[in-house]
Length: 93
Figure 1 (cartoon, rainbow, N blue to C red):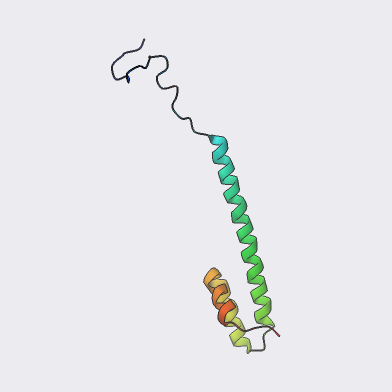
Figure 2 (cartoon, one colour):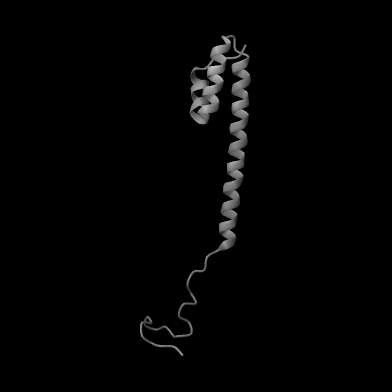
């Protein structure tokens, strides 16, 4: 049995609450999958850039100490280290 108190005008007891938006779990799963795909792509891109930087640093004609410092900078500060290396780091042969 339905109580008429609190119902908006023109609404019946049977239809009240049926038009509420239901969560769309398929859309949520698709969004999570898309985010995971981008995260995986960015991780692989970052790994490739770090390897490229390390190879370039190791091939540079600078002292071994400077090479170690540059590689540590790139490894310890992943994004900022790559940017600093790209702008000011030693170049390969």
